[in-house]
Image (cartoon, rainbow over all chains, first blue to last red; front, side, top):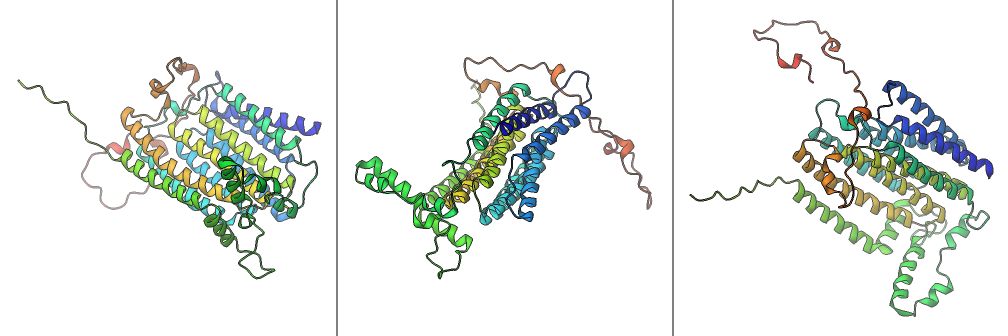
Length: 282
Length: 151
């Protein structure tokens, strides 16, 4: 584990310094192109070292796609925050969204992969590009070529990254051993302790209801109530089954959020005529 | 198959995306790039949720990611409307122009512009415009404003 700790430190140090170099800032008399490329090289090296911390998921094609999508996501993220042109930022963000969508697909979330591409890359990024069109500066703006306190911000955030890498990588398995898939799925079934608390007061009852929603039969991916035995549940059928039974209130609240946002956006974006002060009568 | 080692892959990528988004949000002065960095943070957390959902064999990770998608869409609509309104007030997407919204006891953020702003990259001028072969009869009008450099 000492090797892992050293590797994480190296990744964080190299990546932080590379990102700091890439952020738009004047570094004395050095040419911006050269500083940008040097920073990019260091960040790429940090990314390759980070890849050492990953374990290949098994099959060759799965590993290939996983590494490809992860590299593209992280590289796209770095390029998104450091490029000087907001249109390029939006396009790199589109690359990040497509990569995370691919990672969702590899993790078995097929509906979300399609949903993310449609909503994020298809709607949100198009909206960004329209707003950039309506709100563009003439020529290269000074505020695109200067970063606010990049050193302190990069140090602070990459310290956080080191802490996260430490807790993910070095703490290891939660029980000290690797559980099998059935053990993991059934571990979330309500135990006798939770069931016994149901009778004790309002707060416990709410907690028990929430626990049941998360741990119920339909919430488990392997539950198979609607299909004949031996046939796996289709993905969207299972997702929809749990969405509309265990998380019904969530659906209602999400609809309410969308409605409120619609009303708010229409109210904000509609131009209102200026109110003129009443002319003083003579 | 989806054991802790594979889960930690997803968690690491999600953590890196989250931190990169945080760096972008704290550092950049363009309102639109700041908001894009906030969306990047949301992508990182969504990846973490999906990973944990798959690890525990539970749909709840994906359900909450659907909620995140919904909230991100609503937030994008309202935030971009606000950014347009702010741009119309000051004619600039700079966030340092809105410093009167800071905390009462905080000093204003001042930066030495000359020392900090990167020199702009040279934009190619009319010498880089493509040379097209003339065709047809030239109409009787003088050279127009689009042939001048847009500075």
